[in-house]
Length: 278
Length: 138
Image (cartoon, rainbow over all chains, first blue to last red; front, side, top):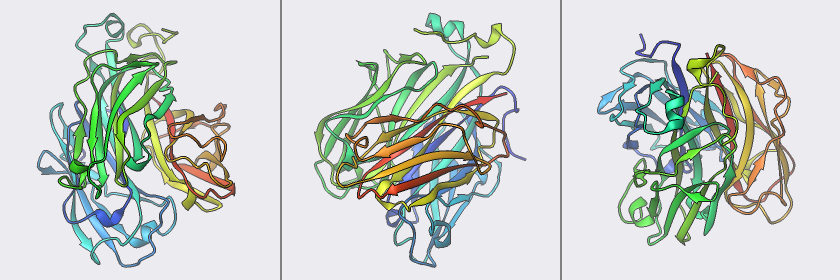
């Protein structure tokens, strides 16, 4: 029986881990120790084939998730070439049967435990990990949050090709559409860089005001060109202020100090909280 | 600050929280009409509120014209259509808002959601992400 929270008082969200080049996967971690920062449970895992279809047959991999160093019971993703021969194929992991809860400081990882035929020869995909969490009573400290004591946690993931990071806005004026506050900003390294000395510094803006903290420094040397591997997480600096947004506010991701990347890709992960409304 | 709703502890009715789905698209690799995502199962009750596209690598050379729409159980949403064109898919970071969602947007935990892509003129390059704001309810 799955160790999930009760059906009421729960929220749902998802992480999207983008892997642009399946040839970069091996029998190793596909996601290494990401800390969600809130208590919850992993409830669903699936992979979506991207727009580069798999044309070479008899390839595949098996992947499973861990919380800390403990494997989930179930949630095993078995992917074969036939799953991704058309765009948008969805392959569900096996049902999650337990060991799926995580605490505020726990880490989640995903490891590729086996490959078939030496692994995929081409293709891209994103792995979606769905979570549930219990509504939280926040710890106060701000009048608006005190008015809305019950909060949910949510995530916006932005798959990104590092070569497309401009000097300027990487994301311009999305309107999240709900009231909330930003908790942290991270990068998931889905496909490694091979060209060194490429850089970008990313920060979040609400309206035209920079969030205080949450600054993410990406360096191709650390994303595979010199060191680093598929699955690693780069964490932004701690978010310390100017992080609240209204439902009509805009949110942008700004890039500065850019030395244009040649390759490499992954997902930007913005963790947020918001008040539960009726 | 605008109107932000009634705090949960002071009101009755369904409680609402929000989550965002994202679907990545390499524009030059897509077929004329195809599912970009075929039948994900959200696994909770909710409503699709809005859609928007954020351009990654611009698709600014050559021609190109396409639309993205969502389906619940194979039935198109009313609204939520994002239109991509050569003129609008630049620069990087550009936001394109879907049409207003006006109906057919509620789903139950066992329903399926798909994303359809239809192009009249293929894009020679470009990529981006389709975002879907979802209100979960209980």
